[in-house]
Length: 213
Ligand SMILES: [Fe+2]
Image (cartoon, rainbow, N blue to C red; front, side):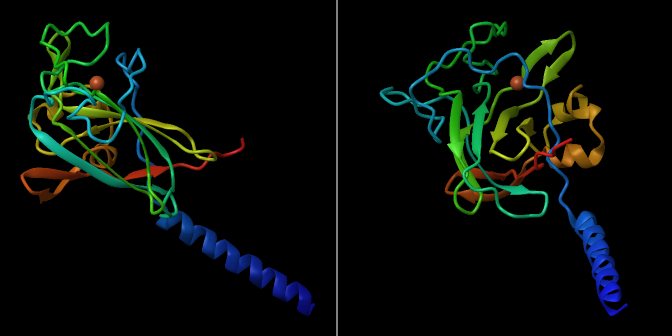
């Protein structure tokens, strides 16, 4: 009888803990389409400074920014050494992609693509240009955004897009506005600081563990 009592008490305690843990869990970052412009050709320079291609005398055009954040799991623990695959349009709204139909002039000095790893505390940071808006179809113009694919063994690979706060085009974007408000907020970076003359945007990412189903 005593043993049974201890066990049921333990189960009850575990049940309570499990429901508390569920209530406190972070919302996984919403996923979004990869889109048609994932880099088609490999390139040498994929480092964390997208404003400067190795060996180019001239740096990228546009307004430079810092994007930094932390990769966490739903329990709030840092995800260490997660791979962040990042690509975006240049300041003119053009991708380094052969099938980008945008007639805007491509910036040959913009790196366009980076592959980074989160550090031992889950943090990452890169320097880039504010991406330009670009025509999608008809009257639809995509707001400035950065594409992310984040992967780490034992987590579900997340493909998503990061948006910027206070961009008018956010209000008319068909992809962003298909999401409920809480998800839109999670997909939008926050302007948190200034590093010298560079604005620093914070974008935190929450990964979902892989579940065996
Ligand atoms: Fe895009």
